[in-house]
Length: 152
Image 1 (cartoon, rainbow, N blue to C red):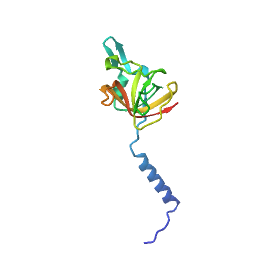
Image 2: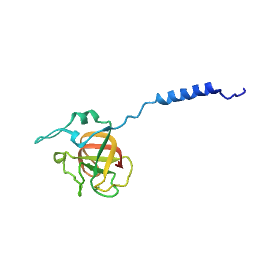
Image 3: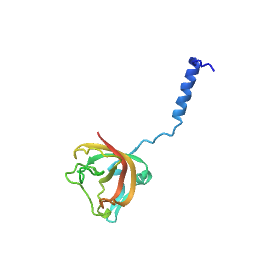
Image 4: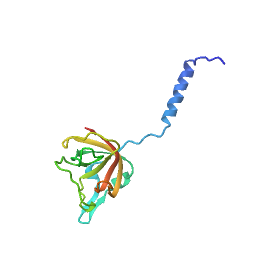
């Protein structure tokens, strides 16, 4: 069999077919932005009620901006994202004490922590509901998991 190079029309057809194959791949969904004031629908003496937006985004990729509270230790694989910069980490003893202006972030890989006054954007999957970390005993109501962050 003798190979002959494709002419211009055949080459363009092959490029078009390759582009069609690439565009047919399932698109990775972009994270939905969410802010601290969108986390809860109601805050009352009975506790916090998740907003409709949080319920709709459960298990989906989200992006959120805030500040990194000082971590428990330098090699921790998680930190607390806060609405305002904090000098101390706002850890709680139970989900009943959970403030409405923090969210726990579990990293997908080790990253260097930022200063507490630097705005960061976190991206990852939103988990909803009370959960106790088996390693630390830390209790959370909301988490962003498999996350990474960047300074903005």
